[in-house]
Image 1 (cartoon, helix red, strand yellow):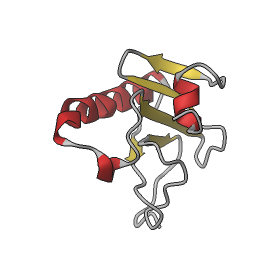
Image 2 (cartoon, rainbow, N blue to C red):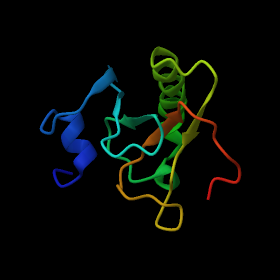
Image 3 (tube, rainbow, N blue to C red):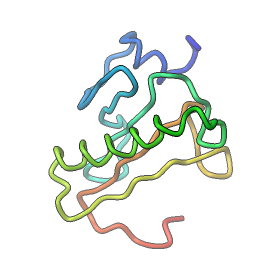
Image 4 (tube, rainbow, N blue to C red):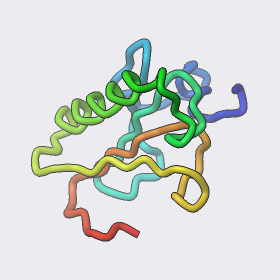
Amino acid sequence: MSECIFCRIAAGEIPAQKLYEDEECLAFRDIEPVAPTHLLVIPIEHIQSQAHAMEEHEALLGHLMRVAAEVASKSGLTNGFRVVANTGQDGGQTVNHLHLHVLGGRQMHWPPG
C-alpha cells in the first residue's frame, strides 16, 4: 500500500506530529484541522474503511477507540470531544485507510452534516 498516505505515515516515510504510537496504531495531528484540536487515530494495518473491518479486527477497533480517548485527554479535551469515522464517498472519507477523527476544543453541533 505504498501509495496510501496513512500507510506511508505509519511507516515513517512521511513526517507527522505523532501523539501516540504502538504496534497496532498511531495517533497524530491532522494537517488540515476543522476544529481547534483535530487528531487522527489510524491502525498500522491497512484497512480501507470501517465497512471493510472484519471480525478479526474487533479488538483493534476497540483499541483505536481507547487510544482516541487517551489522546483526547492528553490534549486537554476535558469538556468533551467527538470521534468520527467517515466511511466511503457519501460518508465523506477522503483517505481510503480507516481512521478516526478526534475533534474538540469547541462546541460540537448536531446534526453534524
